[in-house]
Image (cartoon, rainbow, N blue to C red; front, side, top):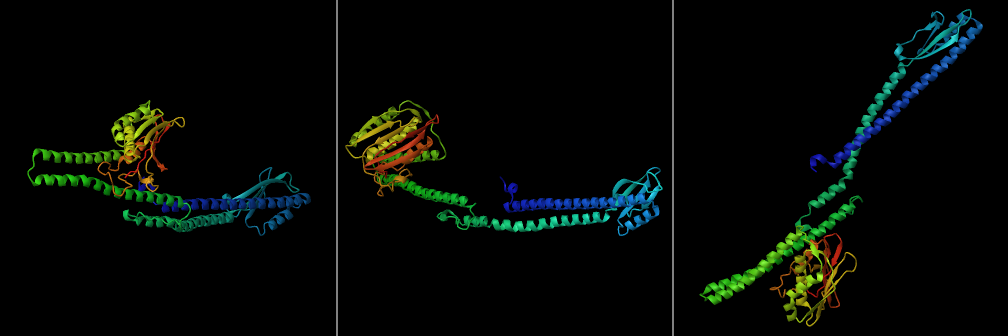
Length: 459
């Protein structure tokens, strides 16, 4: 997602905090305003009710005594000190005025209470009373309160937003510190790790994962540098041999036999270089995610027998015998399996103890699993070398003996074939028995374990 669509996390948090503060203050101010408005209305209604009770009492006394003049005088006294109130008494029969005190303001600003009372003697019938209360002062006060609350809401929002902006910047400072730490990382400083000692616990999983990624990058970078050096070494040797032999052949006139011998030697070196290049291309395709082309394989023993037949002469020269015990079926890429088994048996032929027996054991330990082991006796591989035997061009022997026949990609190819089948390589060595193999998945999705064990010290 583009930066323009996401924007700054700090600004987004500040905006949302400002909106939340504004909404919260609006709700609070509206509640205060509503409660004040209801309080004013309740007070006005109660005041009208109290005055209505008093007026009923005065009119009831006047009706009992029959003194109209005294009643009007008492009504005038009643409104002394109440300039915000008005009263209109009209006769129900003809609608004529009995008593009227004019309202101090327009009718829209009045609260009105209507009721009927008996007319005092000598008048007969009833009187219609209209009691009015001027609420302009309350309305003005309510408007003032509303404006004050609105200003308070805006001012509070600005204050909270400014404080929230500062808090967000303060809260995101650990992220900026991590950014500064990552800026210092380069290809030559991959050994450094992010310091999470002063970071909040929410960032700790990210720091741990990033440091683990740095560890993997450091290892991959170191392997790449070693791989480049190994490639240069492996290719430099045959090229130097071909160059020197060609220069020697050109220094003087040679007959056809000598030239053919030189060309034959160069051809062998070229074939070795071509083999290295082909193996590297194969590993490159595996690294890019190439997968095995699976077909139904009814007999792994038959596949193993074909590979054994190919290595029969080499096994005899090494004084080794080979037996196949057991069988299983599955869905595999047969050419890839043949290549992996050929590499493993070839290693066993080179490093197994002479006059020992090699046994290929095929078992099915559980449904959906197949285990294939090539077991023979030889020198125990040091534990320090076991994790790296599947690295490209890795050799446990610093002298790089047999480099003319083995360029150190055999077990790397075995590991690649295992990954192409959705599995992983396996290796163990103890008590003179070395086990190297693969764990695979068949094409139907069932897990198939293939463990090929061979006595080897990969140089």
